[in-house]
Length: 393
Ligand SMILES: Cc1ncc(COP(=O)(O)O)c(C=O)c1O
Image (cartoon, rainbow, N blue to C red):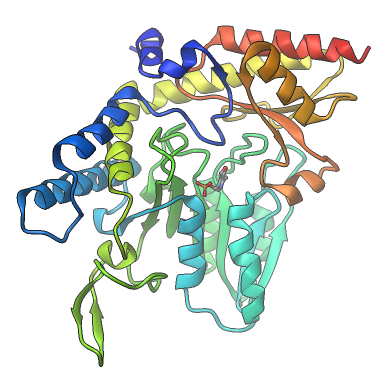
């Protein structure tokens, strides 16, 4: 059973705020914060490097978190790499693949900047980058991706769910078509992981990336990169913790995942993330998906009833609702919502300028939902927006 009151108790900040900026980052549940506290107070040490008991315990807990995350995403444990965020994960792939001039990469116009700039920068190496269009609801037609594939196309980098409108891509068809044409696929699951069932193998991703700090409810400073083939990229960073032999003449790099985690990682963050993923599992991913899409549907329909409000995105959306209020700058809407009702939403381009500019938009207000939000909060949002809209009459 989905016990919303019990869930809300694990997020004390919700007693004071209506937090609807979950597509940016989510709140972290008490058990995950406690797991981090336990690390700091009971066994803090470095990972993978010591023979003493604290180092062993730290390593065990860190590796337990890896197993939890890998099993949740149905990824191989050896291909599950902890990073700082989704941006770092994507950069690791863009850096780690071997590129040749005239290689071709396909992205979509509705990508977050983090799944755009690492590819656009490859133009410096002579790589060609094409951005395929999406429809006005932010959905990319797999056929359009397929028809953009040339004999030089190496990789398609595409989101699973857009952070702008909550548009859900037909990701399995996209990966299937790309593989049929011999291309690899990076799936940016930043807005789907922890919000809906997500299975790396079913999705068919060669690379799957997600932050730990959004739907997975982990702390900020955590991210994940799942690799189908751990030899497909070279490590971006070299240094301690990722080598098993070093001399001045040569060095030998460890197998994955250690080879991709040079230096001291975010140990407390990863341990907190592991516990947070357990929390998501306990709440039930199908329950979460149902709950969040119900909230988003309700929000979209209540907001659409306000004459001055335009709601963007598809009917069948994930837990993200983008809208604007005629005659009022989205940032002003967000400030008034905060100051009058302590409602926290995002405003602006949402780090997806080409996506919004492509639709002639200069920004929107975005309400995004997590497992702990309520229908009452959605109603409060709609009422507050309605009051703001009345200001321009
Ligand atoms: C779709 C998408 N991709 C990538 C990112 C970047 O995530 P991070 O800030 O963890 O690097 C975000 C963050 O909002 C996102 O929504």
